[in-house]
Amino acid sequence: MTIGVLVDLMLALALVGLSLRVVTGRALFRDIVLFILFGLVIALSWSRLGAPDLALAEAAIGAGLTGALMLMAYRRLVAGGAEDVAPRRRPPLLAVPVAVLTGALVALIGLAALGVERVPDAAGTIVLEELGASGLGNAVTAVLLVFRGLDTMLEMAVLLVALLGAWAVLGEVHPGRLHQVDRRTPLVGALLTTVAPVTLLIAVHLLLAGTDAPGGAFQAGAVLTGCGVLLVLTGTVRPRAAAGLATKLLVIAGLAAFVMIGASAVALGRAPMSLPGTWAVYLIETAMMLSIAVTMTLLFARARALEPERA
Image (cartoon, rainbow, N blue to C red):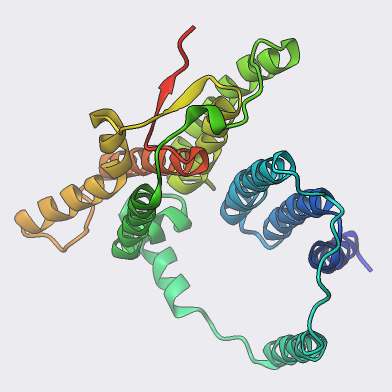
């Protein structure tokens, strides 16, 4: 057994074990920590499968942002008098046979997939053949922006609709209800002044590297969201009742960039959603990164806008 196979086996066992502990645990805080760990192990698994883009997104969103949301919700439960070790209801008797049958079905599908003869991937082959003509070195970015740009544009539209829906049901904004750590605390202040600039640099690097290497707008936006969450939790920025023009422009920037590039292509007689050059890739990717980061930070803060904390 090689080292690689041993690592893959350990990751597989860790995923199964962590998932079981998360759904069967009785201590809420411990289950949240295990869920965050589960997300990190998934990120490692994606890396082992040769998908660093997905690994970056999973680490930033699946483990980072989702974990932060769960910890915030847990603190509100504790503040409301909920007990961490409160006993949970036992799962219904039907849950056990359903889980067993589901596991058996997944195992059968896996065994069947192993026995299927592999054929060349026509779509992947076409992408690799046309990659040079796109001017991009990263096949993932080429697929997202060149070969299925309409799908990516609709993903940005879904993110915008989700924020608008959250704003529609959001009541009056109460900045004091957000639990924030005093950034004047030495350790917190040092963390903020060190991590925030580094996070910004990493996001910019991922954005610029996305054209030729793993990275891109989604990964950069997720990392930049982490910086936004840090600023919210430390009280550096605070919720504001109404969204200003700058916030609205940042929220729609990603979708607007897609629409403008697509409309200009049609006006010039080219194919819809065709990109006129690498500069258009950077324009769209930058706009998407800003929209993703601002939208997800606003969703985390339950706010319509954010403003710097006044000294």
